[in-house]
Length: 570
Ligand code: SPV
Ligand code: MG
Image (tube, rainbow, N blue to C red; front, side, top):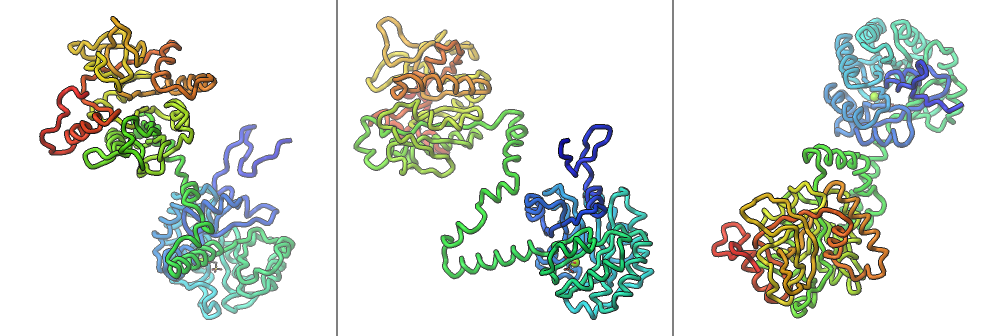
């Protein structure tokens, strides 16, 4: 037989999850000794669930302490209920609220019960003291007890106002702590049971469990018994099991460990003026993200934030030193060369960010440590000296989870070029500059042959890439030049990854560059759509380019005058 999840109830063969209230009730009624653990906010509620507990004690002491106030009803009951909402959201465990005295008379209890049910709280414990209460461990023997009849009225009122039969009201007997003796404790417990309490919490502040065990024996299982062994903690748990206790509340240990942890770390950081002693001893920031379920947010963002499309990412190839630029790239890669006051790469990154592309992976190689990694993911192609652009792209393969723009790192372009590229629906698209259809300069490369030339009157024509090559055969003029920007979208991603995997098997993989990938896509029958532009960009391939890049960049800056980006660049 399969093990049955106790949180599931079998009804006509189908397992349906039990409500939180039903699960708390089940814990109270089960023949096993059960345990619930204190939590005081959403984070601790989640931690209690992850530890394996089946329920949560929303402790009055701990909740007031985390607010920084005293356990004297200084936090209003609505503030407590708001806090419970965070706890119930963070954990699906049943929560038993420590409802103190019920925050007033029978009428306050009625309203409390209704509000607790609305927030998914499984039950409330009310104690027979006078509002506003004081924690029982502070002079408990001097605290007045509630009138029995008045307290029974509260229990009845609470039971009469609950909508779900499984919502539990636990009546807490303070007679032992207040020094009224065993007989009074038993008398009160019986009265509360008859008033409708689902369980009795018998409280004690002695360091031995004797009076609890005696009470349990005299009580004889008339209703489930709940205990809080904060003071008699050294009693073996089996003693409680044998005494027939139903539920143990570990009442305040997470707020206490939080306090001691925070004290130790705050002191260490204050005294040593460094984080170095504490970093490895505390939860990582990623662990906090995990506890907050940050991954779920990221996944949801992909579905909802961009009209159903995942937010785009970009891979920037920036491993090279730059041929012809050696004099300037002694201590930095080409992409870090300053152009009009900021590095080339920053122009590119800002361009991506302006289009809402924030997940930017830069593949560094030569002097990668000199790359300004602010706002980007920097990965390395350590074999940059012996490998080509595809090996660099492979180093960023993980990035190809979303629609991805792949770009050379030494590009400057007007923003519409990127916007139009990412707006295309095609699985693969490239930007081709039709103003460069004749080889004019030795360092210029990546000529493109397409299915049609750029008919600038026919805006929106569908043109496909046929090939990219550095060599221009006589009599076969190219249609333009690839500027070093391509977009991979939707199902194109998996197909590109598959092809990349196949190319990796080739013995000459290390020599392959991005144009080889584009040619391989075309050869594999993929349609690579062409977006024609006419200038409005610059690549930096040599010193000449570098000098002219400054003028181009100035033309991109706000309020600049006399920029030279208006004409066909290069
Ligand atoms: C609480 O956790 O706030 C309780 C239990 O009421 S005790 O502090 O032990 O009274
Ligand atoms: Mg309390």
